[in-house]
Length: 443
Image 1 (cartoon, rainbow, N blue to C red):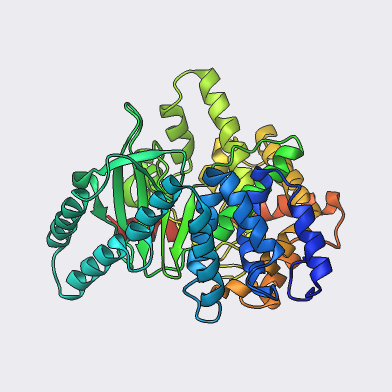
Image 2 (tube, one colour):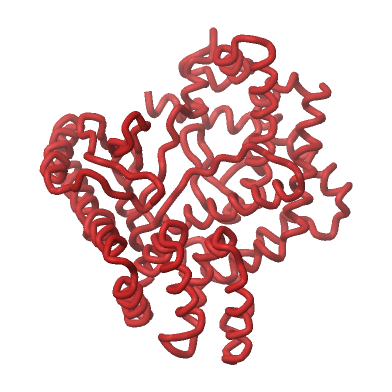
């Protein structure tokens, strides 16, 4: 917080930057979004913080360089700070390697606001407004992608993960998703022979920055739990904002949504699969034939379910239907504190069993770990207020996080309280009705 607006003294800010310079790249990268926001509070365009950011980006382009470029690129659209971030972007691209500059120029051309993919998105939306059918829209999409393919190099990197190089777009696999903003499902060849294809969702018309912040905080919680000796099998997907209203999300391969599991949920599959208590346990059993692998899978589910119950509760994540999770800090649009339904409990044998009690204990322990690091989470959110995201504009927007952390309770009291919330969620039928309605809507 020494880089917040309250500390304008050059000496204080220089001290903070010096300490930041001692961080390993992996740690430094974790706080990059907040450091880019802190540039707004510097007295001059060229500051100790700006120099440190560019220096670290040059020294480690894959881990820091790409992230820094896109974080500053998004802020360069802000009229108030356009000059500062534009100048720093130009300074970075002037001093980075020739190869890096070429990759960034290609990424900018493809993925930035008003780039190739955003133009394709807008074309698709225009067709939708004109009343064209889904087949006509997909045909137009693939025609545009085929033309774009002819201009792409044989190998290049996406902003999501610079370690992976992609090739041409697999046009026949690309499609338009059914969400209101009509995001694009894009598949790329993996430039490495035999590698899995790389699949992303490109959005235009949505503010992806909030998704990025939430995933940053979930990743940070996962690190907290690992340091505490508990691996919760968290697998947050990657997400990059490439403009105020454009961005991309990683599609996790070899995964299915809970909606898909509900649809195949045994005798009560289809619409009523959301009310089938054995849908999850049946799916796990079907994919883990022998008792040993089934037991391992249940343990994996227990740990990851505990992690996401705690994380979504603490962050106030809303609109949590079985095909999607959207970010709404502290907005109480849900009927339950987090998603935990009877079919999830059935995997652990139901209320009162040893495994269910183990799940409750795991959740309570991880909730207490997060409570002990509350000051860090609050600080990171405070530093993001200048980004002016829809659900994070004032300090008041962070009060939800402090309230649900129940700082007045002892660890034992907090753990018991969270155990009660689990049962409360399980006994509320609203989420199952919501899931069923979602299945009906998207049949």
